[in-house]
Image 1 (cartoon, rainbow, N blue to C red):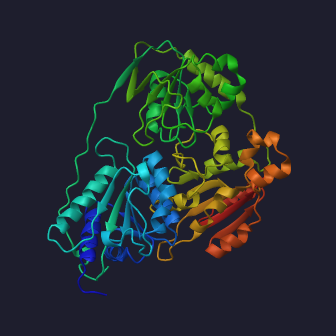
Image 2 (cartoon, rainbow, N blue to C red):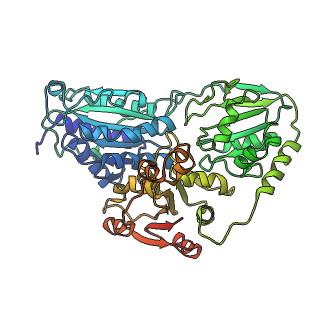
Length: 524
């Protein structure tokens, strides 16, 4: 290894600047072109200045980083080599783009003279993510110029500012494409010994835009993914029913109407009285709610979401604002009518281990210090029906609502948490991301439960149109796609504990266990 390398000088100062600015979580996949970045990250980690997470698979790595950023609200830095390594980040980058998650992608690349000439592991990495990144910094290969150190420091702070949305824009991913020439690395300088003069950009605070609404219009508050406590505060302040999805962060309080989907679908006399919908976050789960947004007799008001970005699905919002106020007092009988309708829907569950029992058991076991991750499959929709109102942290990748990376997202969330992280998902969702069960043996043991509602395939599709028109053989092969994977052997291969659950009692015992556990819940 060379004693002198402009690549190493630049990488050391860049990563030291991230660390000095307070960025803690770094995610690395091995590679040759990125070796200077890897060495600098290792030096900072050895000195206790960052947390370094090493993974084999860049796709899994990126969802790990996304989970950590979701849980912390701070940027995750991802380090990859060139070529397909960069392309494998794309699914997580898309999710981060749509859900406003701050990621900094340090993608190593060949210098200009090796681009477009057939060099190994080289493709056009500029624009590879198109508009899914907030900005692309294409950095020329360092040559040892004195100004490069100051440029590296500024690049770090600019990247943080953009990905965090300091300018008032939606947070999201930023790509820093770093060309390196040989010698690709050196031992010096040691990044942990550097003390860069870091100054973060100022945070722009826009003036909020208000809408003054008529209090007489019967209104419901819809809280989709990323809604948060603001939706609860507004609903309770004005006495409106709160229709909150399980991953909204708003499924709490006395205004939460848990059975809202059934009320809208089965009680038209009440549902038809809705004159206005106020939307927080990004609602994605209930067709009945989405239909309200398209109903010409219903006003739509959207509260801007900094995380989830622009939302006006029906393109008929009368206002897209930051806050609303009213011209008069609200009649609280409207809320009471919804509460009574919700209570009338309540019925006792069975003693059978079905999807409702699974959802209720997971919610009951999860405490405020814990985290709950919901996969984008049938069970999140069951949770929308049966999950109680409870102040717990619930996460789900609802930016694009895909099943990719659910295991990795959950283990990323668990990296810096003190309680148990539970991830509830279907069997296909788990198998789709099975490689993310691999962990770094150098990291501390995690308390993660991957709870698999195992119904032998994609049962979510049974409620869609094609299930009525296709014969069962075609439906199973094309959509349900049952698998023959032995989850016990899968758990053994990756070093996870395995529990097979067939009763409610066995489920309760499994949810109380600690460590890395795959809980295989057998459902009909």
